[in-house]
Image 1 (cartoon, rainbow over the protein chains, first blue to last red):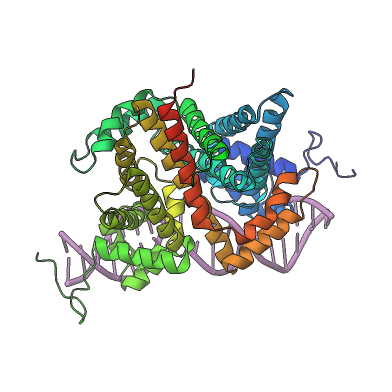
Image 2: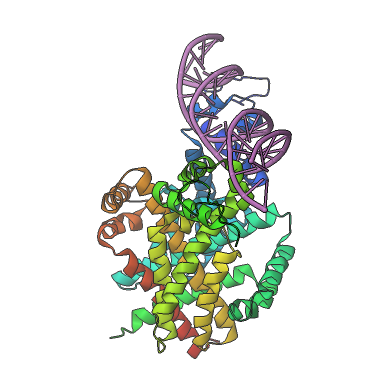
Length: 233
Length: 233
DNA sequence: ACCTGAACACCGTTCAAGT
DNA sequence: ACCTGAACACCGTTCAAGT
């Protein structure tokens, strides 16, 4: 720990991988995905671009590390909040909801998860969900397909939510106004070509994102329960 | 139709929105997302960058249009292939599988769908699935949550599949070698922290993407059937 | 070992100028 | 109306040079 070289007058403001990741997260939260730039990062950290490359291999690695920090923290909170007697189903809901809220707060995490399969953040999520699916005690085949279904569903919602946030942000609209605008677009579609979409345009306004998200998880869990107990031909 | 000004010697090689979109699709298919560049596009079309902007507002719009062309074509094929007596469940499977295969062939479509909620390509998918869900005759609330779940699940798989293709392509690996590399990574994880992921690393190699995808859809459909017939407290 | 900052090879987009 | 292509304002990344 001889790192603290005390540049400047403030104390330990030496550059480190951790400080860079923290600054990246702040930048991403405040300015969106387009806001993360080595130039902006250099300015925030009062250093040169090359200094950042000493600690971090590329922008992709930095994004991945920032995403992983948020995901790890989120999953740790979900795990810590669960009492010992929590059912696997409830634990799965809690994991999903934790990720949902985290992505709501950091939309860029949703986008990044869609880009980084098989990398650390995804492995953490797979592990958290997989353990609970295993605790359900379903057959092996169902363990795999059920776990995959839950994971892909969560990632799908995450991505869509993140993209919606991004779009709303770009158009400088709050959630309600954004949804109202989309609902208006849908309502104006050709009734012959888009009967379904037109008919549900109204429901878009008052729906509850979190409740719908949980409903989807419950559907998959219900499907697993039905498939696990009863084997169709 | 006085458009055919016959520049060059070949005939109707006049620039048009359609020709630009076709060229963009070719470029995306052959060189991935990074391959779509206004400079590359200009060269392919033997024109200047400014000429493209006359027909297309921005790169984002071009990507959206390219994605929409693929999605529209895919859904039309799924619809045309279904005989009149197809059950809604089978129709939903066919729609999903059609999209799955299309994204397998054009990975950038998966990535683009994750970015373009509420835009045309997504509306097409929503409509196709929604109509079939409605044909199932489930209660209104289930129609919404079931349709959303199916849509988000499909988009989640699409995104992950696209990202995996992209990663494999970047590392210049074929599918089997890529999966083997991931499996090896997973098998090397800390057994205490990642028991589940380690234990399923082996299954990664021989699993069938399409079959797993369908299994997930069937789980959601099974969940809908269970929730629709039987109302829990 | 760690940092600086100019330089390089790109981008998407614009726009005066042409036909 | 449609096209040209140089120019602008950016990027991520590298690297000789410093401490």
